[in-house]
Image 1: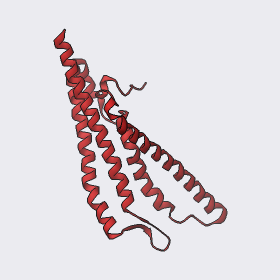
Image 2: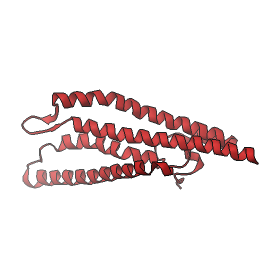
Image 3: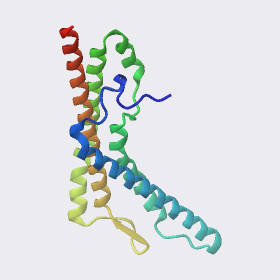
Image 4: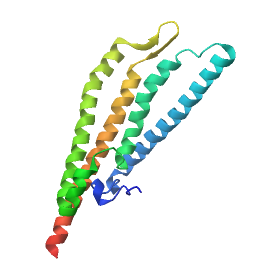
Length: 189
């Protein structure tokens, strides 16, 4: 049985009202990732059919699939974060939820900040490469058979990681807000 995204165990409300535009963008990226997955499945099926029926593979399919997997993951990462579906070890944190809900929310906030830091490191590492690939005009593939500029792939990674980072920060803020609202509710009793 799955926990709803706004349960206490995941650090707070998954989509605070102030994040609606970001949520729409996250949903758009998720849909684009799903469509891209569907198109890749069609391309692979067409390549298999072309190989089997005509002994003529479609040029560039291995390269397209290889870079598509990375792009699809980063397009859908923000939505995964928004819904609280990023894989993590909840056993440690769940033990604190029984002892102190505030401590549990503090640990949740730290985990969300950690996620934001990790995607920040990804952006920091990919951005210079993307700019270099753009300026130098680098391509992926085999010249004369299939080539594709490499910088758009890095741009998808940067955009997807940035969106995931925003979602991590929103979730951390929601956990902190709930932590203080829990404290003020206890103090007023």
